[in-house]
Image (tube, rainbow, N blue to C red; front, top):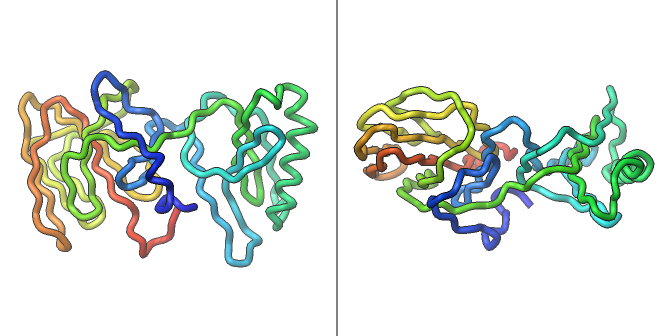
Length: 242
């Protein structure tokens, strides 16, 4: 299941009242995965046409391995990891056997597996296993405006420090966004499956935002003072997926 096919029925409608923006989440309109921190795992399954090269994630629970996708906020360092200089295997079923053996012979010594759900990130060369993590939820915040696939939503405040720069214009794919006055654009945002930009209107009044695109009619919208907005756009389908 790709990002584009994630189950929208699992999307949670969220307001911005008395909440903080999660450190890791998925925008419910564009399915862009977003992380405000560096301690995350992006789980996106890939298998080459030959089937000999692959990467992805699995969960381990009650003795069973299951493929998982999404983005995860990692709370602790990995409980176990190993890697090789050359491909340890070119067969995904063999890799499952290796992972299961490692869990039973190494991790079971220190963790009560019957009470623990593990997250496993893997490729042909390495395996990393976590026991403390939170899966980023698919969230729909209040929609402020849209132009084609570009969505603008009002999101809760952040509770971590991020660097920022003052801007009056930004470009997201083929959309040009002009701000009536300078706003704060937060840096250090990590995205997958498209682009996501956090904008904070630090002015004391609402300001006009103008969206222009060669493929769409002009859109004008006002963003409120001292509010945080997410501008997001899924990656165009003509490019490769994450």
